[in-house]
Structure formats: structure tokens, C-alpha cells
Image 1 (cartoon, helix red, strand yellow):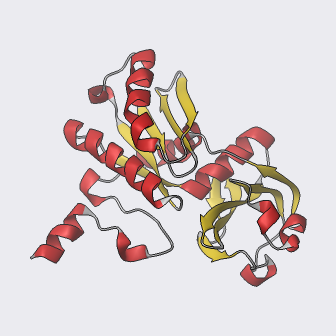
Image 2 (cartoon, one colour; image 1 turned 135 degrees about the vertical axis):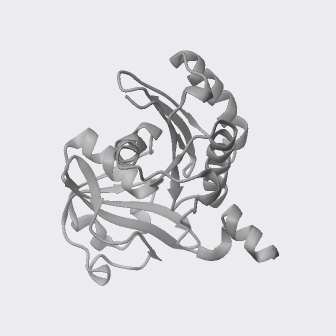
Amino acid sequence: MAIILAIEAASDFCSIALDDGTDCFQEVLPAARSHSKLLYPMLNRLLKEAGYSPKQLDAIAFAKGPGSFTGLRIAAATAQGIGFANDIPLLPVSTLQAMAQQVHSSTNAETSITLMDARMNEFYGGEYALKDGLMSPLMDDFIASLKTTPEQLNMQPADRLCCAQDLLSELDPAWSNIALEAQHLNLEAKYLLPKAKAMFANHEGCQPEDIELVYLREQDHWKTIKQQKELKQ
């Protein structure tokens, strides 16, 4: 079985997980504006607890966005550093897909709408449904104004509405009626793993220099290492 490390720093929490096919190890800490200070000590502790070295990893999954610009970069840079040093492929997973996977795991919901605060009076969102054990997108992840209603986005009713941060109170009241139940959620890295395992099995990993983050806002702000080199030519 593959040994996969997962890194999540796109929210106000910092979390890492390691799955070796038999056990899943995880550490989660509140980390508002302190992801960079927490991440490497957390990694060292987790690897020691699991009994592995970075060279033994088969792949590294990380939340590719949307989410906190700074947090996404920290997670990506950490994954890149380990990947480059040990010739390990990376598995970028949608933050919103992982949230939907967490909702399914905790509630058995087969359809969910996942939302995150995007600041600047906007939010990130996605709609997902269960397919072959994975929560799969019914539409592209999006960014919208807090005033936007589900009807304006052509969203369908779902089993669960899941919000990261205290977002629901800021949204149009119509969001409270789009799902059977609503809940608050702090994303945990281990919920990146179901999608990451499927990607690894299908050889869908990428090289560290080729990763691309999903900001939705200012999409061309992040450049891969290859793109940066091309711009300098």
C-alpha cells in the first residue's frame, strides 16, 4: 500500500495526516496566521509517531485551494520542498472537495454544498455528490458575492450545507433552505486522502515544479516554477 502524506493549511487550522494503508496518523492545531511556524514541527512529530522518514513516502497530497492565499502557498511550498528533495510526486486536491468528503464521512450525506469565507465580502463554494466512494463535483468551484443566492448559481438542494468559518450568518437567508441540515466544519488533512489515493492509483500525480494552486480570485497570481522560467526568457 502507498504511504501518503497530506498537508492542509488553507483555513484557520493547520493539519497534517499520514496514511500507510493500515493506519492513519493526524495532527490538527488552530493556526490563524501561524501556519509557517507550526507546519514543520508538526511534520517532524507525525513522521516520528508513524515511524517513517520523508524518503519512504510514496506521494504528498495538499490542499490546492481555494482558500487562504498565504496558507495555500505554505502548504504547496512544503510539499514541493519534500517532493524535490526525495523525488516524490504531489497530489493537489480541491479544498472544497476535501470538505465535502469530510461531511460525507461524518454524516453519510451523499450530496453537499461546501462554502468558505473568501474575505472581501465574497465566498468560495462548490457542490458535490457521492460517486464510487468519492464526493465528486457537480459544478466548478466558484467565488461569489455574499449577496448571491443559490438560485442565481443554479444550485440544487443537497443533504448538507457545510460552511468553514462563521460564514452562514453572513449569507443570504436563502442558503439556509438549500439543504436539509447546515453545519460548521474545520477541514482536517485526512479528508484529502480519499481523493489523493484515487489520484495516486490512477497515476494522476504531478512533479513538484508543475503544481498549480486554485485561487479563483487573481487566478494568474501564482506561477509554476516552469512558468516563472518561461517569463524570464
